[in-house]
Structures are given as C-alpha cells and as structure tokens.
Image (tube, rainbow, N blue to C red; front, side, top):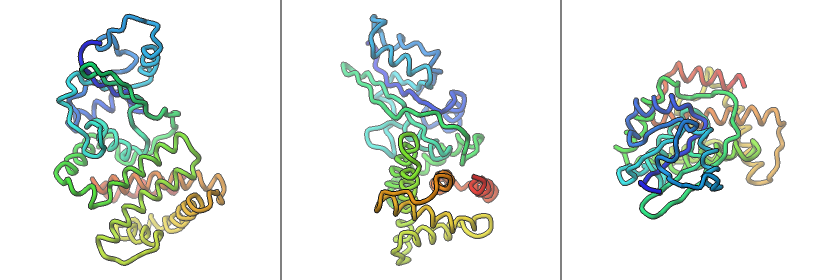
Length: 295
C-alpha cells in the first residue's frame, strides 16, 4: 500500500442521491464518491496478489456499494455525534432518520502511515419499499441545517435527549436487519421515551408513568387530534410490546398487528427526531400520518 486513505463502503443509497446531498449540504466535501463496481482499488491499494482473500472480499463488497474515499485523513472533520468517527458518519446518521432506514458503512477501510485496518458494519438484507420522512428534494438542505444546528449548539445534543435517543434509534434500525420486529418496536419505544422523558423533566411536568410521558410529549408537540387521533391506540400497543419484550420476553399480539405497529413506530420515531432539527410543515405531517394509518 502507498498513500494514506480512508474508505467507506456505503449500501442502500444511490450514488446520485449521495452526490446531491454532498453538494447541497456541503458537510462532507472532503470525500470523493464513486460507484463501487467502477472503482479501481489499485489506485489506493497496490497489492500484487490477485488471489489475496481479503482483497477479493473487498472487491466483492465494492460491487454493491457506493465508495466514499479521502486521501487526506488528517483533514477530515471528526463526528459531532459519535466517538471515534468522522463527519461522513454524521451525514449518514441524518440520512438514516430522514429516510427511515439504516444507512451506514458496510465496511470502513483505513490506511494511515504504517497502519492498515478494516472494520465491518451490518450487512443489509435489502429492504423493500420507500418510507422517506424528509422528501428527496429536501435531503441536502436537511443534512446541512441539522448538522449546522448541532455544530452551533454543542450542548443541545445532551440537553434535548437527542443523545442517547439517537443511539437507541440506531440500534432499532440495525435490529430490523437481524432480529424479530418485537425487538425493533421495543428499541424505537425507548428512543421516543428518552426524548419524551427529557422534555417532561425539563418542563417540570411531574409525570412518572412512561406511557403518559410519551403521550404528553406527543400531545404537546402537535401529534394529536384530527389525523393523528389514531395514535392513542397505537401508543398503547407500542407500550404493551415494550413491556412484553423487556419484562416477559413474549409476543402477545398477532404477527400482522406487530408488523403494522413496527412500521408505524419506525416512521413516527424518525419524524420526531427529524423535526427536532427541521420542522417538516403541516402538509408533510399529514402525508406521514396518512401513510402510517395505511399500513
């Protein structure tokens, strides 16, 4: 190997979409983006052994990925949200809440000085369907505004409950790929409950019951009445799943109902986190509520 580099192997997003977000947000311009199947690894890796197992694996992974590469690792900004990560991880996290699906690096490859390493992520099973919370036309603006707000308000992440809520949220998105829906629902619930609990405490509302905290938060944030009236019953079911999961380890509801509730809590948690950073407007809220009811 010769020159230093860091490479992200990113799945489940089109190169054109990621390039648009990069251009419109300006938040990770240090990274060059390539279609993995067209990427010549030898420009950064001069291994002469074409049968090297690791090299063959990386080439195979690249075929299904978008590659983000920087050849100046020392100039890449650190993550604002995650420890020991880079600004590109922040952009992928914002895209994950904006699109309601787990967007991350399938693998990160680093060569810095004499040190070479790879770290594996979660292999996606190729989820069907689209459930964007932020419209595609607004993705770049959302990433810019979200990360700019976090940068300018460094204490907000803790004070708002966004951290650790985003950690639970990410685990819920990952669990969709590796575990039954009941675990996903439980983890999304904890993400919402964390945000709601922080809100209740900050406003000294004195509510102790976890379900009532969430319901009060939902009401105060305008997700109640009218087109959102269906949420009252839905929240009851989410809370029941949470209790069954964490206290009894059982699934009491039907598979059909669980499938519906997991899609609804996925969309709603994404919406809550998105709107902490960029309000989507009443019309978009109505569209999301209607979609949640249609599952």
